[in-house]
Image (cartoon, rainbow, N blue to C red):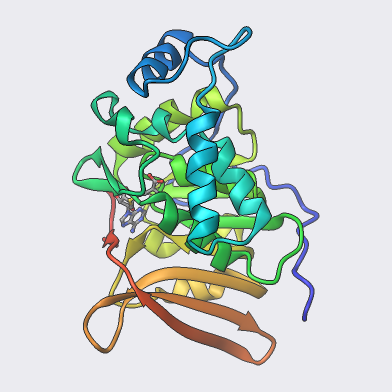
Length: 264
Ligand code: SAH
């Protein structure tokens, strides 16, 4: 198998083409009060040592993901690390580790853990160790970007709704993830300043895969995107860019929110 492209050049991207700033996630201490509230809502035992621990429910979720067929150790580990309850509305914290999609506001949803794990596993197919630089279209709550940060060296995540872009920035702050870069813009154009990408993953489904994504994918890289098929329903499409062109696979039916053009 062809080895993955490496990206020795560390980007110092300050602005997207439209002149909008790129925000690296700056470290900030987690709010203990928020964590305590989430912890209580989840019905977990009291404080453990100096901090609070919701890892037991996540371990259970990870065991379920493995039983459902997720095999990539790095993906399972990442799913076990990221506190999903920090990305959902407080009223829904109790459902954060169930295998269900949840509303994140602005008519958008956070995908089921099972779907998140599945698409990241597809993105990493055949890769040992971390992936290189990747692009996520549809930051939403920032949850998937946080998971991706543990399986790739750099994560560029773009969101077209300003309110969600701001919310994701806030959600991600306590996680201290310097390799996550949030961009406000239209992801249908990709993010050319970060290209080429070892992987591109879309959290929103379009009628077809935008040309820009194919152009911005590195040779040897993979793209995973929910796409409307000729049969008229949405399915997961995986595109592998090789020296000869593109290998395209259409996999199982899925239900992602629509990919839309422009910003709002
Ligand atoms: N990955 C997210 C789930 C996001 S839902 C999470 O973990 O929470 C899909 C997101 O894609 C929505 O927030 C939607 O606004 C966004 N989206 C749709 N079309 C887009 C586009 N052209 N560019 C960027 N984001 C887009």
